[in-house]
Structures are given as structure tokens and as C-alpha cells.
Length: 291
Image 1 (cartoon, rainbow, N blue to C red):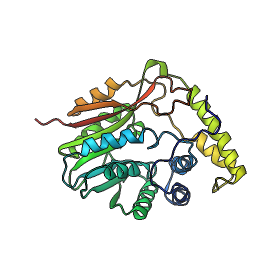
Image 2 (tube, rainbow, N blue to C red; image 1 turned 30 degrees about the vertical axis):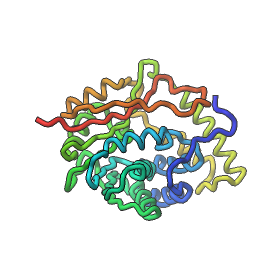
Image 3 (cartoon, rainbow, N blue to C red; image 1 turned 90 degrees about the vertical axis):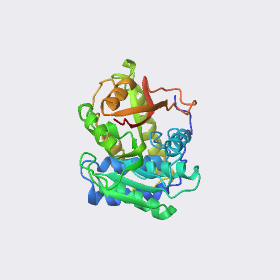
């Protein structure tokens, strides 16, 4: 199901080993329940074991974000939530593919750890980035944004709370501004399906142990402690409830947004014979519906 020697690519400019260690150190100071998430995520990405962050169809992300920001003079970007610096690096790649302009980037998160990683990456690459510590349900920007990006951020909100989030996001948009929301939408076949995650986690555990044994990775703690963090960090907020694409679109439209496009984000790795069993991804691009 997973070929020998397979690893997910690392296409962004991040110094992932350095950022991973920074996440461990900073997370020990600032994180509470989110520490295992912020600690393991960049390590898995640095080892090519993630495949769920910006590694997942980066070229299409770059294309879609470029379309969303096209025609703007000195675009203002808002990144809502960030596991590490990966989403920022994806925006950086999109900006690099666009005509020259002065891009202003703001990252908002309720935890200081990913904000520290974003500042570190920005300092190493020359990006101008503002980081703001705030809960999205209380965040009030000083000025509107041309592009608001939410990369899988809705996974961290209960379904009944998402309409209020979308209404807030709509108020953050400048005239003709675009909301770019990546979502994991499912079909009934995905409900209760765990084979994909079980296989991926067994593969990750084997690769982590192999990398430690060969010295390919230097974990900041005992290997089995790290593996325990990785396997225990995911909390399925919505259980086995099924949310199709139409559900997300309906909530966005009810929040006063018009859908510009909803583009599928297909799997890029044909060598993987295991599938996500009805779990799909789309980037929905929307704009505020004017009265």
C-alpha cells in the first residue's frame, strides 16, 4: 500500500529541522493542550511523513491563491490559524509566482508557538509578517484584507459554531476580497473509515524508528514518547458525522458570501494504493455578497 522508501516531498523553503526543534522548545513554554500537535507536526513534515500540510498539492494551492490575489495593488493577506510555518510558506510560494507587489501578511493564532515559527521563517527568508495572538472568534482587524486564507481551520470548530466564524470572516474582507477556505468534505463511505489512518500511522511509526536508528533524525526526546504524542494528538471534533461539499457551501452562502469557485484538491501520489475512503478536499473561494 505504501512503497518501500516512499516519503512525501518537502517543497517549501522552510528549514524544517530547525523549526521542529523550535516548536519543541517554544511549545514547552506556551502550549497547553495543543503542545503535542504543534510539536509533532513540523517533525513529521521534516521527515516527509505528513502529506497533509502544504505538501498536499502545493502547486494547485499556489495557482488558486494567485487567482484570488490577482489584480490587487499591494495585497493584504490574513492567515487564520497555523500549525507551524507551512501555510505561510505556501503563501510565500504563491507570492513568488505573482507579478512584483508589496504584500502585507498577517498571521493570527490563539497559540504563541506557531506564531513564533512563522516569525522565525519570515526572518530567515526576508518576508514581512505581522503575527497576532488572538482567538478567531474575538479577532478584530484594524483594516480589511484582500485575501483571507483558512487552511483546514474549520476542523478546529464544531459544525454548529462554523456559521458564526464565516460571518466574522466575511467582515474581514475588503471590497472584492476573497476568502480561500480549504475543507475536508466527505461522502457516506468515509463515515467510520479508519483503514487509511491506521496504515499511515503504522508506516509513520516504522519510519520514525528507522530514522532514529540510522541517525537521519535527532528527536528531542525518547522515541516512544514522541510516537505516543503523535498517535494521541488528534481529537475528532465531529466524530463520524459526514459533511459534504454542499454543506460547507450552504453555510458560507447563509453567512453572506457568494461562491466564486470550489476546486477539488486531488491526491498527488499515485504510488500510494491506499485511499482516503471518501474523504476529499476542496478549496472554496468566496467573496462577500454586497447588498
